[in-house]
Length: 456
Image 1 (tube, rainbow, N blue to C red):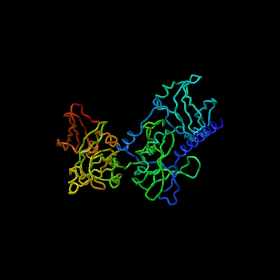
Image 2 (cartoon, rainbow, N blue to C red):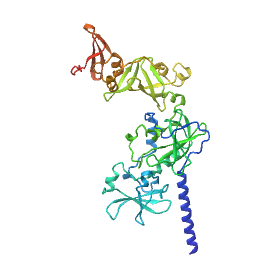
Image 3 (cartoon, rainbow, N blue to C red):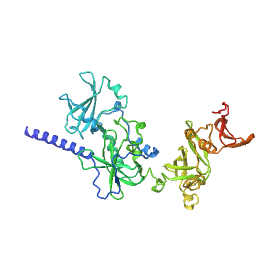
Image 4 (cartoon, one colour):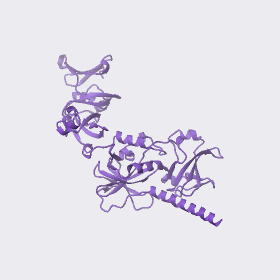
């Protein structure tokens, strides 16, 4: 009898030790940096607007599956990561004692999902087994909603960070090389708990290596710690699948975009590769030296346009096209702030070595299409800018403003009597836009074929 009791006791002891070890393994922190190359700044907002990168989105969608509460599977693991609000409102109730438990008491405990059921009071309850203390707890749904009604929204269980995302990120990211895509990151402080301070990097696109991956918070469950070339560690907490985070993609504004994977890092590996030299073009000012076909959006529609020479752009994003020598440049025209997209290659077609590897068109070579620096200055009025961004012509526009709005030079020009003249733009399905200028070079009226003349 004593032997059975001893065996049972040892099994319980080792299970608790194992649970505590697993709990600690999810809590990772940056090491102290004696000679930082970054400047500490408290509460700095991230002002860098980051475009969604196709390769990063593919990495996330391919590897991190979103589970709505309706589709949770028994055995899914979460960690209790309470925030300030959770210290006031308790989340869990001890099933055996039917008594609420402080979120701080359960902090960093691992909860295993065990399904849902209806309590004696008729309210739905979500059941968990705590891996650390082997007790069962439940979260009672607020209000009188059924589980089916509640789980259909973007709801979840407060305080819980989904560990499935952390496990996958560990497997795929530790040891990988990435580039920084924002300037605002964090370092852990000496304070107990989840204390941190924000730091500001000097430059974007710094090469870093992933050293640790752990748990972050409910909204941003994956904490990715990286090390730069000087041995400094810093981190970002990011949302991957958004399971139980309570956030949608459209809720990541400018200040929180850095908490998405593609807003914080760019993964560099065998499948997703672009050299640091190419990535360094982001943020540069260039101008067109050739009339260049590009894609833009005007009046809610995608349009193919021929961008004129000497138009100034800022390169917002360089997105490599997998398996090809091409990249997609996301450009912002600097006067109208309108966005354009163009496919180019950085491989010089006049280089014999490049030609022997792949056939390259000169018209798609970056060095043929663009030159560094600003082109001609285009003056616009405040009244015209909104129309330019929408790709529309309005009365009173100058020639430059019409070109910016249409994204290209006209297909034809006609002289009229009295010093007046008109431009003709050929549109799809045989239609055309006729823009009439007065003798001062301002739009007097315009008309799309088949529609009424616009004079206001």
